[in-house]
Amino acid sequence: MRRRYSLSIFQSIEYADEQDQLQLSNFFTFMLDHCTHPDSVSHIFTGPSVSQVVDEGLYLTEFEKKIDVPDSYYGPRLSFPLTVEDANALLHAFRNEQLLHARYVLQLLSETRKVLKEMPNITHLSTSYSKEITVCGDLHGNLDDLLLIFYKNGLPSEQNRYVFNGDFVDRGKNSMEILIILFAFLLIYPNDLHLNRGNHEDYIMNLRYGFTKEVSKKYKDHGKQILYLLRDVFSWLPLATIIDSKVLILHGGISDTTDLDFLNALERSKLKSLMRPPKSVRDRQDQVKERIPTTRPSKYIADHGVGGKTHHISSSGSTEPSGSNLAPDPALKEWKQILDILWSDPRSQNGCTPNKRRGGGCYFGPDVTAKLFERYNLKMLIRSHEFKPEGYEISHDGKVITIFSASNYYEEGSNRGAYIKLNPELIPRFVQYRVSKYTRRQNLRERVGTIESSALKSLREKIYAHRSELTTAFAQYDLNGTGKISVNDWAAAMESVLQLELPWRMLRSQLAQMNADGEVDFMSCFYDLKIGQPVKEVQPALVETLCRYRKDLEIIFNIIDKDHSGLISLEEFSQTWKLFTSHLGIDVYDESLDKLVLRIDYNKDGHIDFNEFLEAFHVVHRLEKKAHS
Image (cartoon, rainbow, N blue to C red; front, side, top):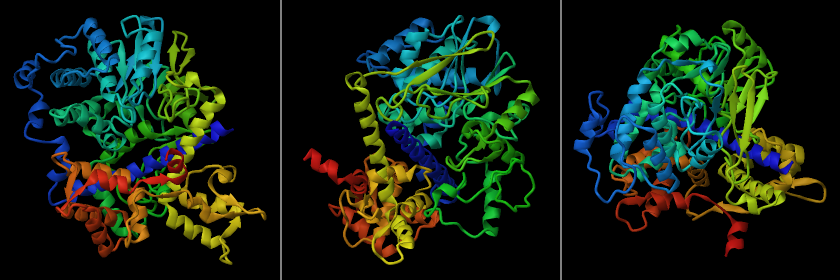
């Protein structure tokens, strides 16, 4: 029970975070479209040398002329075309935590793009050429999982074929190494190793979830070129794979408007990021915006869709708000078709409804699956995209299989990873595993305790970031001003604000105190939490807003910080923050912001050390602090 609710907390917070990301994506679009100096936003992906690197006519020899590999470099030295020996050298180097030199990374990416461009949107495979095909799910930068899969199942080859079903990057610390290994085997065995695009093969997602930061840190001199080339490579990844005309493999799922023929015919590389819809779609959203009262995203983020405003993704495939009479747009259809297959999740109830927990894609029921299978004569859908404690899950009467290959995803010992072996009879065989470092030394009770502690810590941080809204919600039930409300009312208030769909009554004992009459002291939710360095004379709402959008601000200010010095001018800080709060509909007084800016300019040099700023607005758990003092 404790393990189950701990994993529910992790997953609910993860999906709420994705909603924030989808909402933030609209702010990126807003900045890129309306900022007076767009270069200040996009510099991380551009520069005088970047366009030369992504030039289609740039040959391997050009990289050799432009980028020197010093004699002191002791990692793998690649020559193209690649061989199995090169792949083995990469595996050996990465096991020993070596980096591949930037010249070889750029050469590898350039060659990978050439191969991917020749591939169709939907790849068709047959089991008649090999005894089995292995299907792997999300890896999310966990190199140890990939190495363990290869150890247990063998390296890719003509006799050992693989399909990797997206989300190779983000969250984990070795996303770059995973890409290099997968792309190397793709170049060696282009007919035997296949890659599908996931929702994290997206440069705006990468800004929030760690991959951009990883590349910039590992490749300081050539990070821009690598990231720009990766943006293009990601857009050329195939969208789906079909085995023996019966098994459909794609990252997320389907909707009631999914059209495989349409998906196979569109120009997939046009959509570099699903977080930034085509311009024609954004123009239409602006037209709609003029007709609809502005929502307040800061209140109930969970009700917001991809664009940051309340949307209804209808069965007709439209992402316009209900009541819109705008004409259908081909660009909108392309965007939504890909969005649905990369972001959707199955559910047990019939129908197709907007995926409000994630903020994008849909929930599709058994009837939607049956309809697609009948139309295309399919037998099975293999998808990934969702954490599963056992590494896989079977749903829709055996027709839909979720495969998740990143073990220890939330916390050490939180879950197993798995992959699928498909034989010519298309009968799936599941292989489970868990990369073990520390968990072997813990018994089951200790492992569950570690997971529970980490989950509750994340949840408490979420609670503190919504303190004002929760206090208001609690007060609506506390008619006599006693500071005490019933457990039912407390649970209702928590869900109304946080929208996490958690078992609040069960969690109450871990989050709030109860008196002898069975009433909850609702302010006790915040007793053991505080902001790291309290800033006096600044309105509480501003402090909580900064805490809540801390991750988002880190992305924005890392982009503004062109020289990666960690310092940002007071003017840049103020202008960007005002733009950010205005776009989200958050009321912050200029005077309060000015006070804050002046207070955190500690040495009065006109710049903010953003690392210190971030540290000032993280939640401190007082009990933990006492335990460590």
